[in-house]
Image (tube, rainbow, N blue to C red; front, top):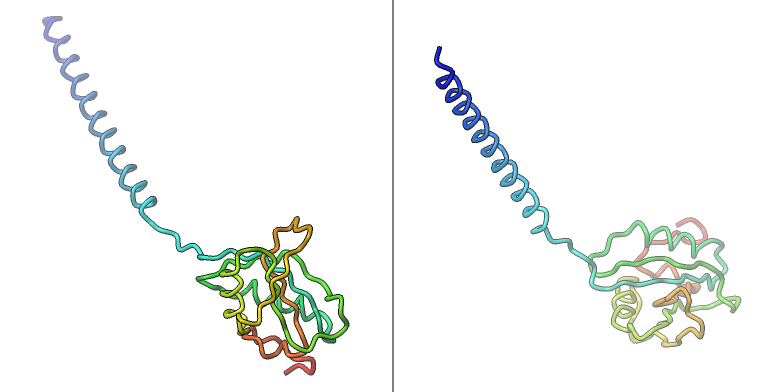
Length: 159
């Protein structure tokens, strides 16, 4: 056999292998680009308002602030992203009417929060915190009328 003929066959075979490898690489790049572009084109629906909420118990029902926190965490809301940052007791022994205290200049978020809770936004009280290290947007003080909220919290006698 002619050694030149073998060399040309090997070169031809190598050209075919390189060509096929190039086709595979191009297909892989196109596939990856399509997958990435589909992932990027998806839009995430982010809530319009972010609220950092403090919940205080202002009534005689034990652990009602904790129960309200649990209900709020489990409830989905397209407009609000509510983060519970603190729970506690209000400094007065009994508050008759539930109130929402706005703690920063984000009053529109507080209006949306009041509507979500079933409160009248016109009753919101603006009182900034002196040392707002937790960046609290609003404080919800649960009064004796807490069962009127749209949260469907259990009443003191279980109903």
